[in-house]
Length: 382
Image (cartoon, rainbow, N blue to C red; front, side, top):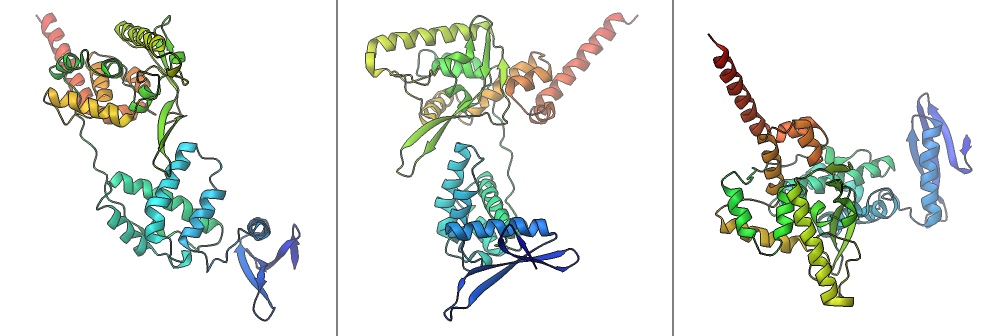
């Protein structure tokens, strides 16, 4: 027998199969309780054995046949998420606390089966969207996959589950007819400047609410989009705000029309007035472009509520805030901006994704191109 790093015992059972044995305590008769783990090589078993003995020494170890789903998710959340973003960690914590533990927490981890999880998903889908179920499934998959690697499970039961189909949401961009109505409707009303800048830059809601003055270059006429503002809900129900990386991690530069900077100058001037008006009560510590009167973060819920009232007033209540982004993309494409430029302005991962999302627009562009070519041919025909 061979000892690995002084922890437990390792031996080769047969070619290509190694066994590691370790002690987890003593039974009522004072006899050592021995457990085994297996791997394809001595090195693999030594790594697993080292992790287990470390857990034993720190009091984290729970016998695989005794640990519950709730206990495992606590271990996973506290010990295996060191590399994830704060916002991601907060989302995981919410899923575990609100959805997973109440439904599955008391079940022994090794008794958890695919049909149990499928039933859980089906019940949740009665109140949650297909996308929310997919997000929940992602947390389940990551955690239980780690349980497999730690030898708590032989396989991951979520792999056998079926997820509800995510229906692609229909876009409702403002059109050549409704966009002028929208601009007239927001004139002089709350968040007028935010809505105007958004429809002519295509920023995501979290990006425009998180836009800071250091990212606005009035001299060069460009906007650096390098972060987003996320609102996280704490246990007590209160909110806190944090800056996070962009959706796909890619920063970008947007070059809007000059009128956008004229609007931003008005926003800057209004902030300066409010700073004088409210004195020490004004606090824009994050240097945000769009704030409330005293420099605080804007609530996405409040902004959305105002937006929905504006689009309802012009007869297009189905339009979502995200459709301002679609409006910008559609306008750009219809005005013959090349697809690569539009894709980069939107911050899409690939041009192919942009083509897929806006295929209906590019189809019309191709038809217009064919019509222009036909007109040219007709002009030179003799």
